[in-house]
Length: 182
Image (cartoon, rainbow, N blue to C red; front, top):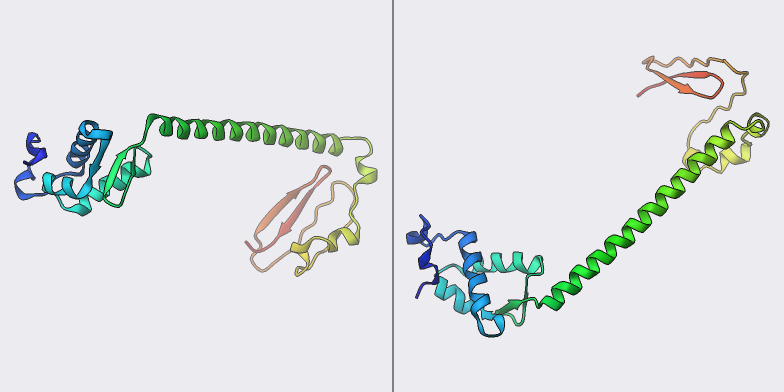
């Protein structure tokens, strides 16, 4: 007996049954089966479908934790307890991630506040300097040529290059223009 006989699918006569119809029939069989466990080989024969198409449906339902394999050819519903445990674990992970996000937001806010306090403090100019050792300690600059220029406020530094592409660097006291290649 073909279980899919209730479906009026246009391809039913040619054997090309849609994955939706296969899914509906599989779910119906699982709900009515003893211990809610079915044999996939038997279903493929009863549904008159290619095993590969039945396994495509099974793999999707298994991937979203609705069913699980009991043996190579047998599948059953995940119990409510297992689904509940999985949902609880996901909710727990979500709460943990929310807490971490709030902590990171708090740390970012503190860092921004600290940077603003340092930048606009009266001691900023007195302690705003970089040593040669500081610059040599930056690994990403080791293979680059670095020019350090001390200039009074409102100084504009123009460095011509063959392409004359202008980049403007802003500082608290002045704008620095860097003409460089893109």
